[in-house]
Length: 408
Ligand code: ADP
Ligand code: MG
Image (cartoon, rainbow, N blue to C red; front, side):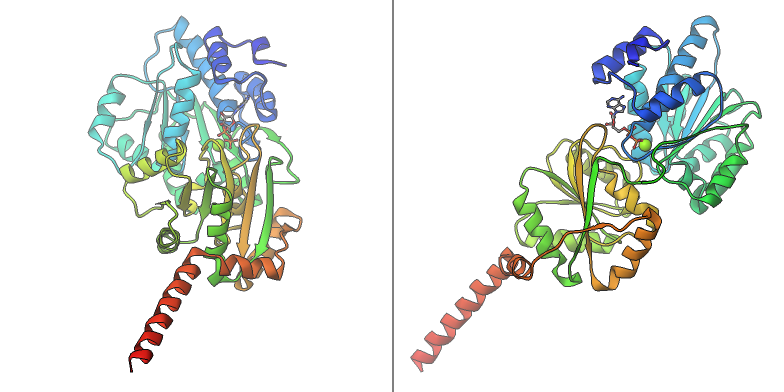
């Protein structure tokens, strides 16, 4: 079935055509009818399979129709997301798919001034995308009214219902009307969270695409065994052998991110870092520079792994193995998005092997091993510009020493 054949408003169809979306993806095909029916939906589908449009299309359509027949004020749908970057991205999808419709979308998040957000809210909007903390602040100060809400969406639902967010979410739910439609979307979910999710919905429709393999089929992922201290040489080689390709590198901590950046810059490779220590405008600028290809190498912590859709990331590198099993799926899922294919490589040191074993247990299969011959391993280190610089220095030093000894 094509989008043309859907019973959705022509404005939306036109926008989808402009985006180049012809047919729905599996998750869109399966969830759109249920959402249009007003049912609660718990949807699990791999990274990059178009979950955003799976809820944006029916929500825009429903609100658009409603606004044609009634003059209803107030926010009708809220989408809760874990990060500001994701809030902006999803707002963008709503605005693009909802162009020329009657649906007004806006997003709010912390870390920036509140007043402009309040001013915009007062003008009236239909769909609000928000991080829970800022949303709660605005509600408790009386700037945001949730009593007209008809639809509540949790994107990255398992993360939203996990420890860091659950309190905010519970607090917010108290402000919501009891009669509402609730939608959960995520690429990963575990039993504990599933139970919690069920307690928040009413007779939900459960949709799960390819539950056997949580990694998207568009991602070719493998592991290479590399000593901790040698990882930078292998990253350098990967970058140099893949000039003009976008590479997203994940590290464990902010400090590690800066350290890897310094190592790359020492060998003349331009790159940027993205982590929680940067302020909002910095994060925004860095992500934009990577998005439009000004910078090809981005070194990030897990903060940004969830949900972010950057076009044409060809490689994801796990420079450090991820702390949480499900983060493996979210990290490698930054490549191979939509119809694109992508490659993910994990650099696993001896110390990290137990982490790999745990990830494999989570995935339910062993990760393909990228064999590196000893010769090629040694070559990677020997040919690093870092080491060549050292050689040059050594040679020079030797030269000097010789001269000195000759003079004597
Ligand atoms: P997910 O939330 O499942 O990780 P996204 O919603 O971010 O995935 O979508 C991933 C990519 O797929 C986006 O770049 C989006 O534009 C593209 N996409 C979504 N739906 C379609 C479609 N029906 N046809 C073609 N591309 C699509
Ligand atoms: Mg998503």
